[in-house]
Structures are given as C-alpha cells and as structure tokens.
Amino acid sequence: MLLANARLPHTPAPVDVAIAHGRIAAITPAAGRPGIDLGGALLLPSFVDGHVHLDKTLWGLPWRPNSGAPTVRERIENERTHRRTLPPVQQRGAALLRQMIAHGTTALRTHADVDDAYGLANLEATLELRQAFRGRADIQVVAFPQSGILTRPGVAELLAEALRLGAEFVGGLDPASIDGDAKGHLDIVFGLAQRFDRGIDIHLHDRDAGGNAQLRDIAARTIAIGMQHRVTVSHAFSLGTPDESDFARTADALAEAGVHILTSSPSVGIVPPVHALRARGVVIHAGSDNIRDLWNSLGTGDMLERALIIALKQGFRSDPDIETALSLCTDAAALGLPAHRLVVGAAADLVALEAETPAEAVALRPVRRLVMKAGVILAREGRCVDEK
Image (cartoon, rainbow, N blue to C red; front, side, top):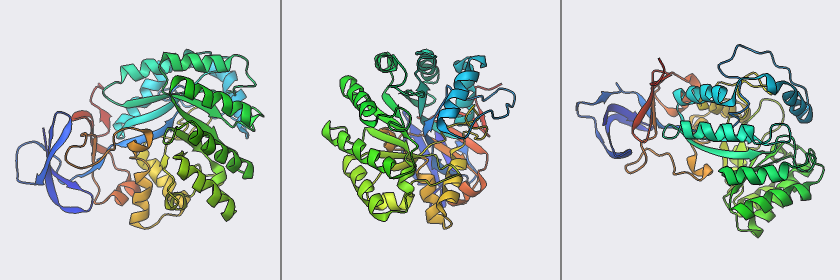
C-alpha cells in the first residue's frame, strides 16, 4: 500500500509513505505514484487512550441526564443503584470503541469493575470486547475495585480470579480515603501483582499532602519488588500541590521508581503539572476516563479533544506546548506497547487529517480522513469502515 502526497509534522514537502507487512516500509518525496492520494493531509501517529471505562459507558443510548453526586463515594453508590438497568456491556462498549477508532484511537487501557455487586461480569464482558476488537485496537484490561477492596468482602479474591482470566493489570482505588487503610489496600494490590506477575494501575483522587505520601509509598513498593515502569497512578491530583518541596520530593520518588502518571485533566481542581513532572523525569500520559456514563455525561472518545482540554488546563498556548499536550495522547510506550512513530520500521498505526500542523489539529479537531492500524484501514472520513 502507498499513502501518496501526505505531509509529516514539521516536514513541509509532501511525501509518499509505503506500507508493507503492517509497517512503514519507506518514506520518500512525493512523486505522483499511484496509491491512496491524501491530497496533502497531515499524518500523525494514531492515538492512545491510557484510561477509559468501556464497561460504564452509555454510548449509543438515548441521552440520560446525569444522576451523580459531589463525592467519589456518592458517585460509586449512585452507579451501583442504576447500573443494573443498563444494556449489556458488550453493546455499549462496542459502540464506544467504534467511536474511538473513528477518531483515531488504536490503543487503550480500560478499567473493568470488579466488586461484590457484579462479581466478574463486567470484567468478563470487557475481555469479550477485547477479543472482538482484536486487530482493530490494542486493549489492555485492568481489574478495577471500584467500590474498594477491604470494605467489600470477597473483592480481593475476585481480583485474583480476574487476573487468572486474563486481566493484565490489577487496580486500586484511593487506599486511604475509600478503604481507610492505605497499607492494607496496597499490600493486597502489590501482593496480587507480584503473585500473578501483572502490572498495577491505581486511581488516586486525594488532593492533599496525604495523596503525595501515598504516591511516595507506591514508589517505594514499586522499587522493592522490581516493578519499575509497570505501575501507573491515574489522576494523582495531589501532584498539583503548591508546596514546591513536597512536589519535588514526590516527583523524584516517582521518577526513580518509574511510576507513570495518567491524567484526564478534569476541568475542576488541581491536576498534575505536565512540564514540571517531565522536567524531573516522570512519565505522564493521558486518557479520557469517563465518557458519557453515570459519572459524567460529557466526553466524545476523541483524543484530540483530550489534548485540547489538557492544553487549556495547563495554560499551554505556544505550538510546542500544544504539541506536548498531543504527545500525551499518542504515547503507546507509556502503556508498555511499541511506540507510535512516523519512522521507517514502525507499525503503520496512522491518522490522516486536514491540518497544517499538529497544533492546528488540536485546535480544529477535524474529521479523521483515514485511520489505520498495522497497515489496515479501519476508518474513513470519521466512520469505521465496517459501519453500514
């Protein structure tokens, strides 16, 4: 296959991109050769959503006004009340996956709830979705204790069974504020990861110095069992602290341990500072979190939109800064996957769109003309090719 007359970021002259065996085989000056003529469209690496909840989404259903509540605990209970009324996970999750792919996402990590109310049903449905979309998206699955571990009898055993079934990551949730016992909670999470040789992805919403203390504990535990670059903390709002000394101590601990930080950059409250964390060697990348579900009615599954949200929240205005926001949304290596790159030899995981530069792509968020994974075209003009 040849993608003719394309443009690469920061390369003004058009190029032809040859693809063979699912990889970029050659990049040469455009020469009018036959192929898929992109007409000067910009090529970008396909997008990566590092944190989504396929089992929670209401995508494809009629609009449902949000019934949530102010606190995390109240939102958990609200979801437990209303969730049994929803159609199957496979239906809702597949609808969202097609939307995400049409927007250019070809790799993602999804959290699947494991708790005493639903058992392993959501996890099993999410594993079915992963199999159904194999070849179209690299999907990592986290066994996520949405309602807590210690406060919910049997959840630790359910998490172990979820890992036996094929979840690649064991999750955690606010060890101190939800379970009330940070040590006990993390003992279980790290113990399961070590026992099953799986990664870790912990939600940490705490915004105070106690949140950073938990981050440093997570970093120390990561080093102790040799899990560098296999542990992610999602949200980590406490890193937005104005206490420069506390931030520096925590960021340095995270960098030494190779603990990754995932941000969805919510509009309210403090968030991890991208430049300051990168300057201290911390890997930070991005995800959508909730997309039109019982927690949040907003979200479109478009990682260009997420890059815009990050840029706005971080105060990014220059083109290089906006491209930094976008880089958080293409970082497959942060998930332990092969990097998405526009170089010969890389997998042909590509997005084509009408924009002059990556920064303009974030600003305009144009329809994706073409989405490709491993050399296979998945979407054209904003629609998956398998849609009628």
